[in-house]
Amino acid sequence: MEYRLLAEIFSKIESTTKRTAMTNFLSELLGKTPPDLIDKVVYLVQGKLYPDFLGIEIGMAEKLVIRAVSLATGLSAREIEEDLSRTGDIGDTAYEELRKAKPEIKEPLTVSDVYTALDRIAKTAGPGSIEVKINMLAQLIKRAIPLEAKYIARTVTKKLRLGVADMTILDALAIVYGGGRQSRPAVERAYNVTSDLGAVAQAIARGGVEAVKKFKVTVGKPIRPMLAERLRSPAEILAKTGGECVAEYKYDGERVQIHKQGNDVILFSRRIENITNQYPDVVQLVQNTITADSAIIEGEIVAFDPETNEMRPFQELMRRRRKYGIEEMVKEFPASIFYFDCVYESGRDLTGLSFPERRKVLERIVKRTDRARIVEHKIVRNVDEMEKFFEESVQSGTEGILCKSIGPESIYQAGSRGFLWIKFKREYRSEMTDTVDLVVVGAYYGRGKRAGVYGSLLMAVYSPDTDTFKTITRLGAGFTDKDLAELPKMLEPYKIEKRHPRVEAKEKPDVWFVPAVVLEVIGAEITLSPLHTTGFNIFRPDSGLAIRFPRFTGRYRLDKSPEDATTEREIIEMYESRLRKVA
Ligand code: ATP
Image (cartoon, rainbow, N blue to C red; front, side, top):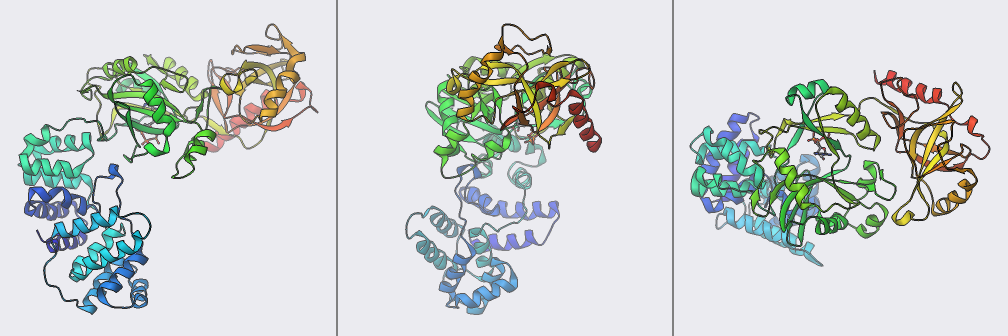
């Protein structure tokens, strides 16, 4: 098959924005493609050589392409550069230069020629590889007609944007090889369970619909993730889920799809990129905590610190998104994993099972540890239960909850956003810009690195109306090693057996103190919480206010008496003023 045919159809596709026209051009192309080439043609249509999850990219800089075009045509790099600044498009420039130079073309380029050359370019690495890549590209362009050079140049620079969506390719495959639209669901399912359009195309071209129906969930091939719809109130959610559902904490981290075969582990991101190298600590957690020999599990990677029981902000996790210096980042921002679904286990595809059945498998194969857990969940049957669970969830540092259907229809719908999962996010919140001064009223023993010192402190505001101290947060962040070592000594004189009568609390810390020591704290926002007594019952029954992501600023306010601390009223005002702004 000649590459020229591909280039001509690319050109036609570019000339339209209508999806039906695009599908027709694509059907024409795929209908003319021999089955053993069709996977490659499908990847080339998308400007790729392989499915994304393999992570093999061409990605040559325009500068290098200019040098290759110069070698191929004999035109100076300078002249080509000038043309490029005029056209602004490397493809159009390659097209013009080839027209100008009129190189002598002996044999037509085939799709295989082009694919093989691009594949070699993509895989050439190491010292001196740049010159090799330029030469290989120059050889290819020398053999190309102008229209072919245009698309080759765009492909190698990752600028081939024909705008052909995955779904359009699936439509065309169903039409050409599946006997029509009725086979579309089968084709789409094959794609959803393998994320590999090329493999689906090849199967249907060779064996028709029957062949794609045989596609199975396989370790090593990512499944396209199931996504959640969104509703605004617990009542709406319960109405959609038939009056009951499982509510789960919605952790604010990075979604991960874990493929495990023996000791081999691959991690795929939500966008189906291979992120295994970024998370060596998660790989190890999986090896130690998933007992099944082979499994595909979904979870959320979170910057959670089990020593202080604290959920760290999403931004900290994002610091882990890098290619180099991974070891240091693992130390600085260690990750934890919260598993929430299992779609395959020891040869069994679980996507057709209901959510409670999948969850049972998950519970059976996970050995829980501090850093590897199954998400917090609860069956909820009414609005109150759901609201309470939501507040608990937000208070622990999450974004809200995910409500999941539990009836027989609650299968894993790969690649689709539907109402079997519904998210309900934090909306009542108030961002904090000012620091607050809080009183230490209790402490929790530390574990791990913090063994022997306090892991976190229970903090309170002052209420002049009742002359009491009301709790507002658990503070574990912002302390240096020196602070941690000194705090027990500093607080020792105030240690008491039971809660101080002037302290109002729902939490039960390991140690209680007489309210005395004041610390300056900055938080991210104020939220509703059933766990703290500040502003209790004011904004919502059975709920108080809490500070999320509190951090010690390093300032001990020894100049302040506990009665000089931030008052309950000030916190209520901060919360209210922000709500007004949001409204
Ligand atoms: P968002 O920005 O709200 O995370 P999204 O489009 O990435 O949206 P959605 O499907 O709408 O994804 O929301 C579910 C997301 O929430 C998942 O992709 C996952 O990253 C995260 N998540 C956190 N906790 C859970 C949980 N218990 N179950 C499923 N997903 C969870």
